[in-house]
Length: 205
Image (cartoon, rainbow, N blue to C red; front, top):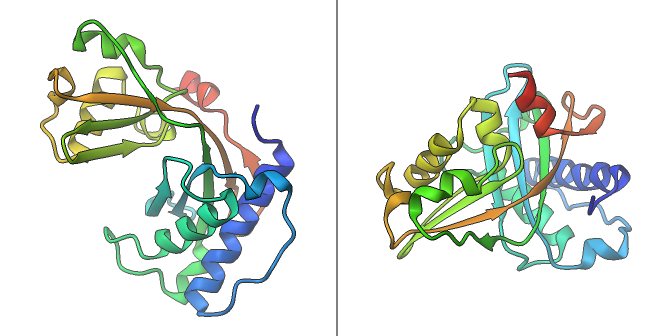
């Protein structure tokens, strides 16, 4: 595993502080971090309502453009302003759960025929990026597990996220990338942080 549980807890703590500071318009407290948090890495921050579990915001950076600590802060601030939802108000900060996904570098999936994509990806392990021309769509690895999708539905949903037709993954012009994520989430707002095991979650469904 690339990140320890302690590092995962720290990543969530950073994201939580960034959410609190952004919404309250206060300076972000400085904190000491391990050396690897200053290395470039992809990361997403997801906000879910508690206890309902509804998505409230999700923003991130799939490729390692920023040092991890900066990616976490920027993703957390972005999740508070996710354009799909109203900006997160101060009275709602204590009613959302913060989840952090620490990503591997996206890798192009190479197949002989597009139909083989469904066998080349693994639900519970892979996240997807669908690319065709300027269109891009990304779904984190936890999404198909939470919705109970199989590989083909996962591919179709990623295509629609990109603004493409559901079967665009069968088009030779479409490129599919996979990545993996280590996911750490609060059990409740500002609560205990634990690592999510998507394969176990998927097996229970």
